[in-house]
Length: 142
Image (cartoon, rainbow, N blue to C red; front, side, top):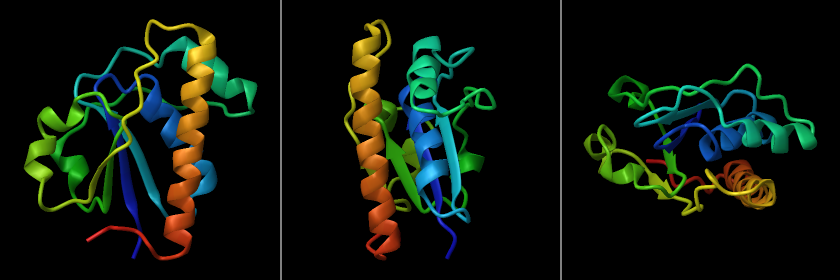
C-alpha cells in the first residue's frame, strides 16, 4: 500500500515544509508527501530556507498550501507539527479515520537562526524515525 503522509501546521511556512523536504529524501519514493497549513502564509519563512540550504536541501520548489478536506482523501498518516492545527478545520473531520500524530515541535517563527537549526534537527530526527517505522512495517496507519 502506498503511503500518503500529510505534514500540517497552521502557516505551512517552516516546520511542515522542512518535514516535507526531509521526507522526500528519507522516505520511499512511492510515498506521497504533502505539507499544508490551515492558514497558510504567503511564502516559506526565509530562515527555514536558509537552514535547509545549509545542509543541502533546496526548498525553492515548495510553497505554502492550504489544508483541504480533499487532501485528506487517501491519507494514511497525518502529522501535526504541534501548533494547534488539530483544533482547526478541516482536521476534526478526519478524526477517527486517520492516524493522527502530533510531533509537538515549538514554532520557530520570530526566533533566531540557531533556534531554526534546533527545530530542523528535531524534524530530521522525527522523519528518520518515521522512515524506520515504514521500513519495518510498524506504521500505525489504519
